[in-house]
Image (cartoon, rainbow, N blue to C red):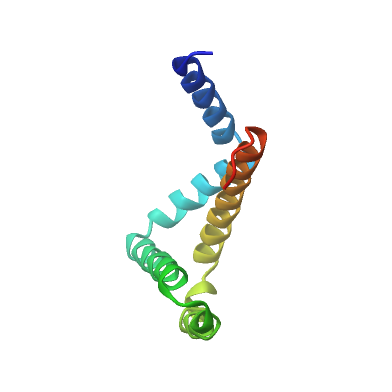
Length: 111
């Protein structure tokens, strides 16, 4: 199989992912929250801070810092629009993680 055939198969696979209920829910929730640009900006700030916290904090401090972070954003997360978007995004991220793991396993690629 040529590289171009592999790339075509990947495109077809990506199309299947985009047809999934999980991806469609993510897109729907993303469009809903984008209709409120200020709220969407705050969601992006939350996501960025969460990413930085999880990737830059040493393991010993992570639990305590995550607890503070979660308390800081508790009221924000109570907004149904925010919560629905973040849940949909998390479900899609988990789907993509599963794809990565299954693909690595299927081709005997050690992570």
